[in-house]
Length: 153
Image (tube, rainbow, N blue to C red):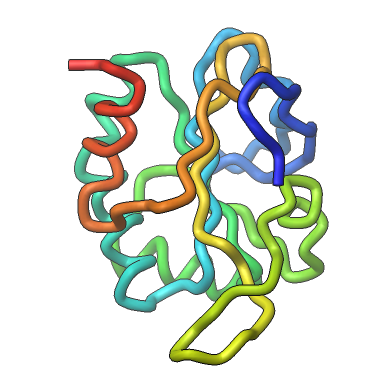
């Protein structure tokens, strides 16, 4: 997994505006790049809705929010519409972006070791450098957790 101080790997995606972009196109903005396991599941819905509910405030702080999961585009579109999500969701069914950031690994679930996506949030600064990595995400309070870690009031 990538760590603070490293350059955030670049990747292409379709922005919520419909425009094809690269992460590097976000230079000059701070990016909340969060990886989540699956659309329309309890924790993932709480996390997405928390970012949705705080999106206006985050944009005032110059943040762009991008969510990535291994779900496909159809699943993301359904998730976005069902919960009125107002930020970019990036489908990554082939796990190219997930592997770039090192968030697919072994984990313990219900006492069994499995492989899967490690819920992780990367905060990327205006120059494309990872400023913070949040591994123990509080899904219901993800925005406040992030602001507390960054010491933003």
